[in-house]
Image (cartoon, rainbow, N blue to C red):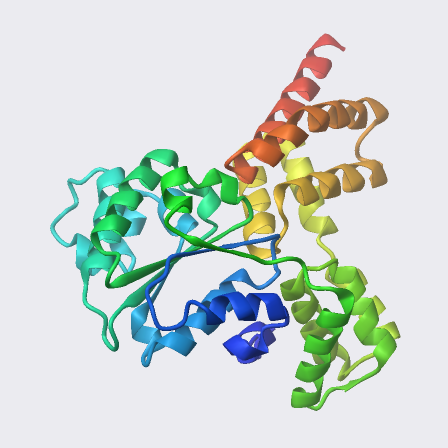
Length: 343
């Protein structure tokens, strides 16, 4: 899709967020550097809400909003971090630093720099549940040192993964999944602004299929409109069949089966990060696709279900969805190898 993404083009202002209770809570924070935890399921608009707040409170939001996805740090090598244009100014001449010290230094420097406009700046940490506890302890000290000039905003699916000293310094902003009617209202507004012919059945079909994931609903609507010049029940149905993730999910399973765990891990990572799945949702999709394919025998599927039962609780309580799902696939592949060797 070469055109600008609708999720960016129609990024909402603070007053336009589809959840009135979220607007009310964020309105109470305007004007002071109050630390926040925006918590809720994937795709419900946590990052969009944080950006909307930044545009409301900063005269120059592009300069005074610093966005850091946790994956920018913890899933990258020292070389990748030091060569990132956002960080290289902080890390020039510090190549001997450990990765831990690099991350701490970037956070400290980002927090200590004066805002371009106004009295404070905002540091947004996306997917905060993946921040290791030792880094959270260091981050707590940075928050204490710069609480007058820096606002920290955490977005997370699992607020319980943030240590108590951080949670206690933040104002919680729960964000539920939008209702089907709320999603339809967003899609209708975008279609009217774009001049896309649409009908109520098509909007309802896309909204219902998204299952509360607003980001997924908007991307599906844009894909449908781009391919068909309209959004109706029929065109939406055809598009959803075309853009499903079954091929990618099958790739993760077959890569694991063939012993290519590096590729399987990357595929899982892409599905979690780019397609908006959470761990339990992707686990269910892995099981569904495995059951539907002739490539996998009854014994394969039975073992996968047994392993899934073990990892389901870990996904609910654990820090890293990708880690647990990759471990599942690795254990499943190991079992296949053992079966072949005893055959």
